[in-house]
Image (cartoon, rainbow, N blue to C red; front, side):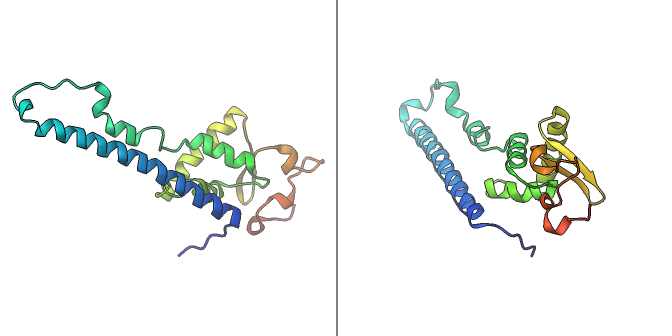
Amino acid sequence: MKMVEYTLDELRTVKSSIENYLKELRKETHSVENTIRELSQILNNKRNLHSTIILPEEFLMIKEAIIGDKLSIEWKKLTYEIVKRSDRFLTSVMIYEKARIYHPHQIKDRRYAIKCISSSLVSLVSEGKIGKFKNETGPYFFGEASKHFRDDGKPDPACFPATFRTDM
């Protein structure tokens, strides 16, 4: 089992995001139960056995409501917020670990998540919204250059994670 280090603030964030997700699921469950109840009433009404039923188009759009944008992850936005918020250089794996704090209930497939994050990073770097720095240990991403680089233009070693620091 891989061990991951979290701060108490990050665990509080995990707890609140899970609670918010549960509230959303309860709303969706309630909506689906109401739809099933209404359909049961229509089907159990003996007058409707041989008739055509006219319903609003939205009535049967349950699947879209459940799978819709409301519960999906906007990878680019999430990646951008994590990189901007950080005072360290981050790799895509580090961003994945941070993303699990904000969406622990939705991120299940690690490879897929890292692929989405990497794609978002490429897009954000090409748009100039975040910066990229590469050294012998790999590519690192950062939000504001003023926080991550010294006055002489070299990367600040304090901004590297302890396990990835190299002599500059």
